[in-house]
Length: 211
Image 1: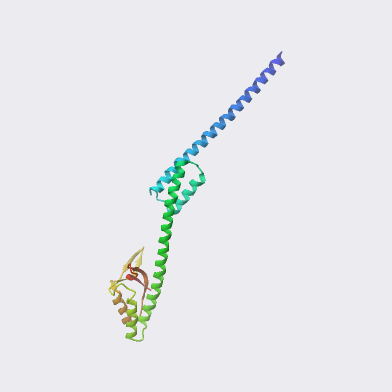
Image 2: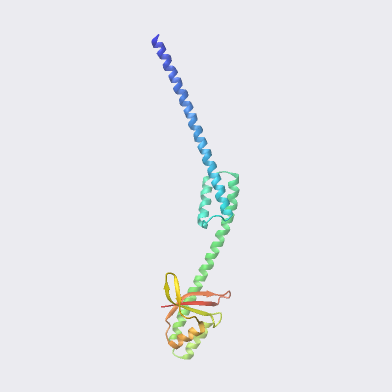
């Protein structure tokens, strides 16, 4: 009788353990599902927030950072209608920004190339004026050089000292006066530091610095 009672107890324990395991398994699946749903909702909310911020220019992100953020959101593959619509709008906006940046970089490269060419010509002409064998030869180079400028009165700023990002300048002069000074002194002691142009491509301001 005792053996039979013990067997019943063991069977009941086995049933309870099985039911408990099944319940625990179902509970874990439910918790995992709830966690996944919470994570999905969090990502959707964050994606909507970030994409709207990019559309409204409310971030301090660089173009590259915005493009990286968009790629991250796309990699989430949220398959959410609102997110998909925002992604479409943001990608169009960033494509325009990218095209504008590339155009600005192209123009900046052109300006650098132009400035480098002018730098070389001016440096060569300064030396030619200083070393000219005659006044007439120096005057010819001076007139040739003045043709690069908006007028003979274009200001020339000569940096005599640089300190902590600030420039100290000599007394301002004009390009015509400076070229005649080089002719009279028979030496060119400055080199080009910065050049500014007008809309017609003529130099309208020149910064020089002591060699």
